[in-house]
Length: 340
Figure (cartoon, rainbow, N blue to C red):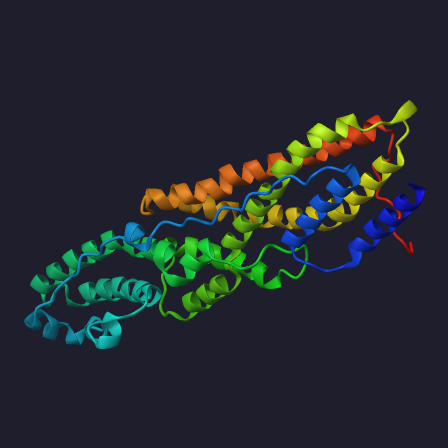
């Protein structure tokens, strides 16, 4: 028995030095706890996929504005004439949502300038342009909504990421926090060209931070929920005669620290950090009337419901261990690692 314990301790201690992904760490954590407890590991269900609403459901229809040739030729004295001409080229008609949004922002500026320029010399045309301006101003929130909800970069950011949050090496992810804030605030900005917007969208698409956050908290929930149920049955039954920890309890403490505290909890801490940094963005988006109810429900589910479930599950997990350590008079400090 003593030899088995020594082998187990060495195995557990050496386990903290291999490098693997979060899913591997969680699986190894669960397996080692079950090995020390001599129980069958709790079954972990496959984490659910991020079920983002379809583009067809979220896309807002934009009513086209037609300009007859006579009115169009009268616009040549204004910069709006060349702008409208560009929009009616093949490239203009197939522009990405980001380019369309910038075009419409510039169009609003040029319409206002043109109305001011021709107000006295061409009052009839000025009135026509004023009607177009009012229509375009009315459409602007829908254009922004399409950019936020269904542009390829934003859809990928909300729904697809092969990666999880890491405890370190998140520089590319950190850059997407201000990028997401930039897109969320575009209704209050006037864009003159697409360069800045395209840059921010590339950052968002590269990191896909929202999807990475939500996949991480879903994975933690998938492992820790059944593990909490498993531990709540077995930890209270462990013996601590005269308030002293048995060798088995000491090994369990090592497993807890070397896997959960040193590897899993730092990921959760980084997840929390990004979640709170993005809280103003989610508040802006979930409160905006231009965005689709299905989109806002999706955001609320992951940023409120699922995040709260994840936090409660982590707290419950830590409390199970704190109760055991208190009952067995174990110090809450980390165990000594080899070479310390």
